[in-house]
Image (cartoon, rainbow, N blue to C red; front, top):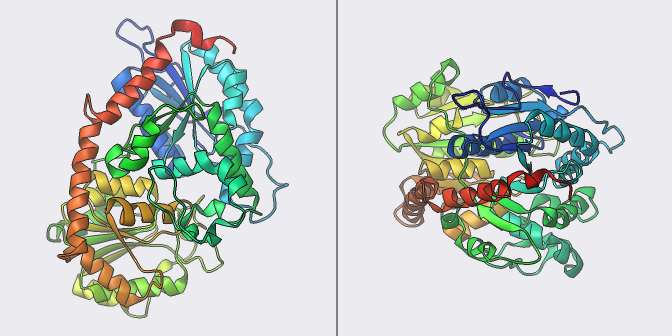
Length: 496
């Protein structure tokens, strides 16, 4: 394609049936920067292919081109092709601009190129381009789909119904809440949702003078241009907003919970060996896995308290360690998850030697095969930043959580998980080693709150699996969306 470069060997035309003709609708899908956005969107594309005979083109941004992303895209099945938008100039943005601002600006400035790509896709797929799906920061790309004559325009929301409810209400809240959200005297109460204390509301909303706040308000308004919003969540984990959003409303698109969509790969390879072979030697449900996601990092002092807290807990642990973020931003690794320096040098003196000698713990730099670790029989807990992909993976594999949120929507997620559905215990704000140790022990072995969390997670694991089966709630929701894409024959390609 003249406006983008293909990232894997498959063509936009996708799968063929036995006589060589292409089957099913084609869907164009835009992933805004971040593997946490790309992976669930790719899982949606794979599900559309395997269950509904669709083909898909994943469209990515030039700013996120990396060896990790290229390898991931190349691993997708032939029904899912990919291409990259051309680079756009963001040099006029101030140094230190928020991630949400960078993603939103890159998307808005890519609308002309995306329009051309979608027109090319209409031609190359022989009129099968039935729908366009953009993820949460791609609302402006709906303009490109409209300009290209793609009638079915949807938002894929990779996080949860609580966050979606907040963003849909944000244009009204922008007018009705005069102060900063962090200064609200009472928790924010939205229809069906767990009350959220002001300081725990989405990070990009915490400073109304920051351009990223205005972008979030803009997205809340722009979502209304979509025909449907597909959400990577399921009813059992947030029943309140699920009940509210299932009801038709004139002021917003239809909402379809279609999750959990997670990337699961059961194959072992050489890079997994260190973690998985260590887990193989541990008793069942005895290890707490500690990871702050691909983009998270802790300040040095919190790293040290966490190390000593894990040691003090007496529990076995597997910890993915990254170099600290003492320059200020806890999301310093968002675009590049590799530690810039040896993270072990920031740990307490003698810590690695002690846990290695005792066999109680394993620390690994930068990365671990997270879904394989969570699926392992030895894993009994997950100390997590509460990124939504990690939360869903934990629930799918039935692993109770210790919540230690860092940025984005993670504090809000932690409130929903701990105060709402009861699938996690939250580490106290002071983050001292004794409190860390006590929280870890409670989730792993406690007979009070910890036992309740373990029971609730087992219940949610069952509900997630049932929803994805044929006839389940999530499967039925996605089938309804696809039916809407295909029942109008060729009409969806006419201009508005």
